[in-house]
Amino acid sequence: MVRDAAYGRRLLISVDAKSYGSSDDQHQSAIQSGLLTVLNRAADRTGFDRSAWDIQSGGDGELSVLPSGESWMEPRLAGDFAHELRNALRDHNHELQDKYRLRLRVAVHYGVAVPADNGFSGQGVVVVSRLVDSRPAKEALNLVPGADLVLILSERVFNDAVRQRHASLWEADFRRVRVQNKEFDEFAYLHLPGHDIHAVRLPEDGSSAAAPDAGGGNQDAGRVSAEPADRRGATVVTEIHGAVDASHAVFGIVNGRQ
Image (tube, rainbow, N blue to C red; front, side, top):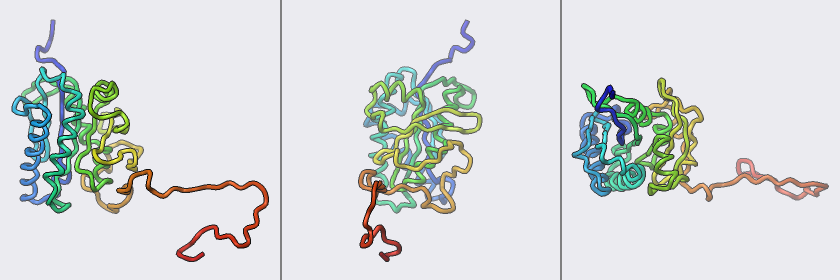
C-alpha cells in the first residue's frame, strides 16, 4: 500500500539573487522585478511554461517545482535554460552600474517533492535548497565580478543529463565541488557561463561557514584574472647540468633593477 499518493520525483530549480539583503528598498524592488523578467524570458525561449510551475517566492529568489510531465525536459533545464538566462541577464544589466546588476545563483536537481501545508517537502527540496545556498556557488560569483550567473547541478542531474551528453553543455564546462551545508555533504557541479570555472580559486572546503553573499574584507583576494588561462604568465624553470659561465648574465629583475 502506498502511504503517500502524492509521492513523486520532480524537476526542481532554486534561484537566488546576490546581495539582496544589503540593497536599499528601491533596489530590492528592482531586483524582484528584474528576476521575474529574466526568468520568464529564459523559460519562454526554451519551451517552459512557468505558469504551470509550483513556485514558492522569497523576494530575492524562488523555489520552483516543475510538473511531473516535464521530467523529460531535464537536459534542457540543465543546459539551454542556463544559456538563455545568461543572455537575459546580460541584456538586463547592459546599461546598469555594477552595483545595480542582477546576479543570480541557480541550482537544478531532480528528486522527491511532495505537496505540504506550506509548500513542498521531500529530500529533493532539501538538496536544491542547499545547493543554491552553498559556499562554492556564492564564492564563484564573489571571485568573478564579471559573471552574472552561476549554475550548480546536483550530481544526479549532471551524471544523467550532462555526462551522458543529453544537455547542450559539455562535461568540461563544469567543475566538481564538495558542498557542505548544515547536515548536507555531497558533491555537485558548477558552471560559470562565459567564464572558465576551472580558473577560479575556490576554497577546497565547501562548507557554508564564512561564505557571505556579499564579501567583506579584501574584495580582491582570490579573484581570477579576466584574461584567458592560456594567455597568463607562466613560471619557467630551467635545469642546467655541468659548468656554466654566468659572469655577464642577468638572471632576473628586482624592483626594476638588474
